Image 1 (cartoon, rainbow, N blue to C red):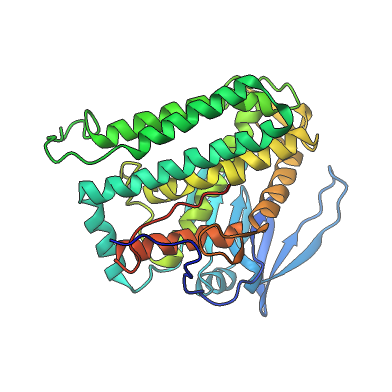
Image 2: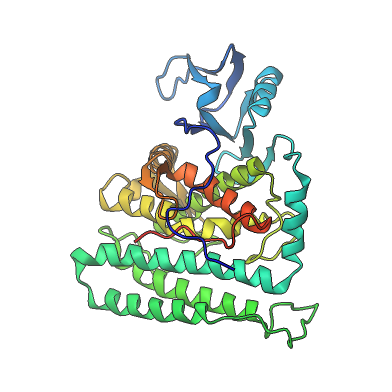
Amino acid sequence: MPRLQPGTRLPAQGSETTVSTLYLTEQRSLVKKDGDCLAVHIPADKEKGTQKRVVRVPLIKISQVVVYGDSTITAPALRALLENRVEICFLSYHGRFCGQLSPPFSKNSLIRIEQHRVHNDPARALALAKKFVLGKLSNMRTLLLRYNRKLKDERIAQGIASLRGVIQQVEGVEPDPEIEVNPSDPQAGTPLGTLLGLEGAGTAFYFGLFGRLLKQDLGFVGRAKRPPTDPVNALLSYGYVLLMHNLSSAISLVGLDPYVGYLHSSQYGKPALALDLMEEFRPLIVDSVALTLINNGILKARDFQEELGAYRLTERGRRIYLTKFEERLNTTITHPLFGYKASYRKCLELQVRLLAKTLTGEVPEYVPFVVR
């Protein structure tokens, strides 16, 4: 089967309009439909000394709505959002996922049939899982390379070499039809299990060096997820959740099922495909934003709060983070495969569309989003 060559054009789905996620962080806000806009009515806050105000946002400029805590969206506003295929995500005040309201699935059911068919084919599923891991580790290595051009840190240089070795091992993972899968532990002793082990090893190398890229000492000694035990891990965990929701929206837009993946196991309530596709974007978007905010002194220790050993952003810190996260998503780059300029937000969608065309056989292979 021929390879997909750089410069290949993926058919554009209309011209790109600058869109953003609408974050409703002000408590007791009321969102109404006002013509072709949403009108966000924000109440006065005596503690902050702010007056009540109304912010109007054109519907065409909204890619997703994220509601924090106590805000109300009227039925006409909800209908308008769903008609524009905008997903509404509901989080607690502190960012815990509560649920989401999504537009109907695409009517193209054939694409989801192919998605399930590949999921049930161990060789094809492994081939895709390899691509996701290669994309992630390659972009991690690139981020370390970029920062070490100035730092010239020998330990980082050694880690970069180690990562390259892991990438080469990943490239060598192949399906083995002779292996019998244990239903109680389907990854044990299988090529997928080997792949996951290599992904874990490469990620450990990367985060073992990540602290050396930071200009502030915020207690980061490695990746800690549940709970995040320092401000840096709080930023990473928060950003990964936001990135996952952006991928879930793009997946639903294209017509795939966010819950059927290839690298991550498909379990009840787990958006496995969103987790798969976000791997290659973690270093480029979330890790990059965290480094920018910390190294430029935009966020400091006072922008985090600690409770029972877990760190999270303060309200001020969260607003700063969301602004910078959206700036990163709207940053325009040249797509490494297709050769035309697109925002990172659009690139998320393009990767989903590329995967869909790979599943249906319209293109020969999935190529991860890898920068140099």
